Length: 344
Image (cartoon, rainbow, N blue to C red):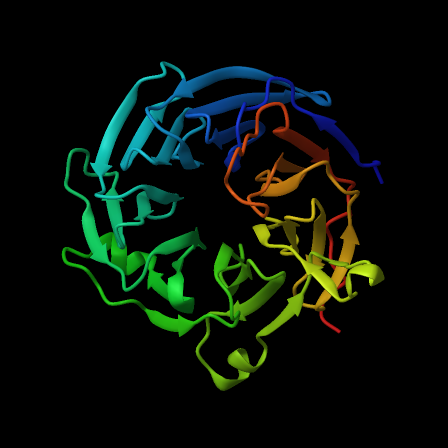
């Protein structure tokens, strides 16, 4: 078994990281979006990474994803716009405009759809096979905070513990806003911070600001719903002189391994943990990073795990700066490092 290694990217963003994502077709191309109003494209090779390009926006960029090819990306930003970027030429095209900042973008390769979620309480569904067409606008009952897709489902996590699940084939053929395939109440009592769908299309995980993760399944049967569970994580024991108990951190990031179906979580405590969703156990916890973990992403082949690290907002927004404290690490995983042991 090859040993695991870890390296740090040079020329990281100069402010907080909002998202990072590998190209689904290449484990050597990585996109990072930042509050410094840029998207960064890195090329990985031999335990190091080089900055290929960066793409300036008018305002902080809150999310980024690849499109149908390695040279196509989509962004969501504080400028309220959903943009397509040609990563080769640098050309940017506005696909749609929301009336408030755009929090998330997700691309579905099977259906050639781009979905954006905005704080104006809407989803925009862009049918990329019909360039220039107006997006389908779906009203939401709450402000969206996280968005993730599986091969056939789209999960939207909102305020007030609301979760809507949409059927992607239905979205692809819809000409008017369809009803959600399912509506649920989050298993977590506090604000949802992240959501990630299982690559096998069976379910999803959510995390909250209160140091918890929940794992649920899509199938709406009593047997499947009885399998859902939640657990505490990303907590540290408080000093006895301060009254003891736990210091609770937000779980900012979740990502599923594309091959083994295990998942990683990253928290405000500066740690990353690997979990076996079927066996309901933690497989390993990595060394503490110098700042909060803001974003995580596995490469499409599962060989690499990218970790975005920057100061969190746990101590407030006043005088906040990520300058000089924002870093991106890439861990090359050992052959079976992320392989679970299966259900008990």
